[in-house]
Length: 457
Image 1: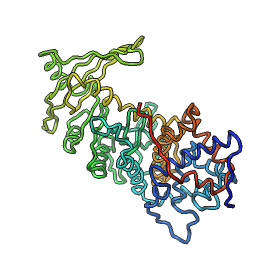
Image 2: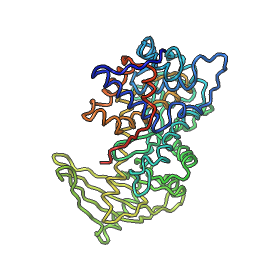
Image 3: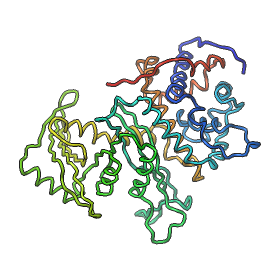
Image 4: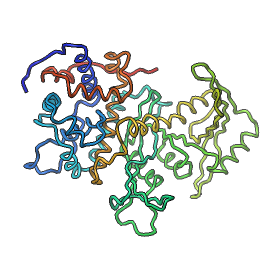
């Protein structure tokens, strides 16, 4: 590729250059570049058969998700065969052609999933260590949701690890769910920290219980504690984990927690709460919030409600109840178990800034990944190992895209925005395919000194 610079000559080219700068500078600024992200992933391939470096293949997979291509087949049809696209791949990864999606699939069958998982954890840990996320600590703790989601489903058995479910029509569904630990913030970040793949062991005997979220929760929290041993963590959990074992895991790890308490869960705890609160009826608070202060919240709470679980372990969780009234809507009730001490001054902060933030994982996390163009439920590979690698690359792409989209570099270039995240991805793809630019100037897109900040409002 001839090393000449060619400055964008019109508004469209200028905007395309700014978009690519936002993407590449985000990667370089927060993580040190693609080599720093993927340089430590072990490559088990034989050297004499290698045409593409593992870094170039992994990065191509990430770009597939960043550009919302929807399937690995689109790598060939959209990124390959395009001279300007291939020139950019050559400048970044020193490869002559864009690798075929099948080349990615073949390589990903062999590389260790744990190595790619470590990349995800390393990226979030680097953001934490560099204090990028410190402003969103909650009473000193990072808020981490643990939630399950469906990943891929099949009408026929896909592998020995498939979970099965009998449908009402008599058919059997074969599926592969995941349990995700995501770090969430009030401004909308939802970063995957660690993934636990829920799957049956190969030697599952007939009559044995399948793998499930509660089993995966124990494995995931053990891994989370080992990898982030000194991190101040507050777990945000749904009603599935409203039990003694989940509380004990948090207590043993010195973690804080908010656990959704449904009306039908832990009936003894509900009764103890009503008795304790009814004795004095002092722990109440009414607040109004929203842009027009037209949302009314009525709180009740009690500290240290005794609860003995089925393993005879005694816990003393605190309970918050919130009855919320919105204009022209039916009132809703929310309850949480927590080990944060509750008082009049901070009860609404605990509920709104802590307990309710669990929905961020579903709204900004899984929902975006399923319906925002990432196509999370698509089977990017039928190979079990490669399928997991593609899933983790999706998480990496989502981390990078969130940092870019919410960063000051992007907002300075596009103060009025460019529409939805899908629009940004589409325009990034068009910039990658169409911008004519020399290698030296393209290299300047991710070099030099600059700052990226985030809006704290």
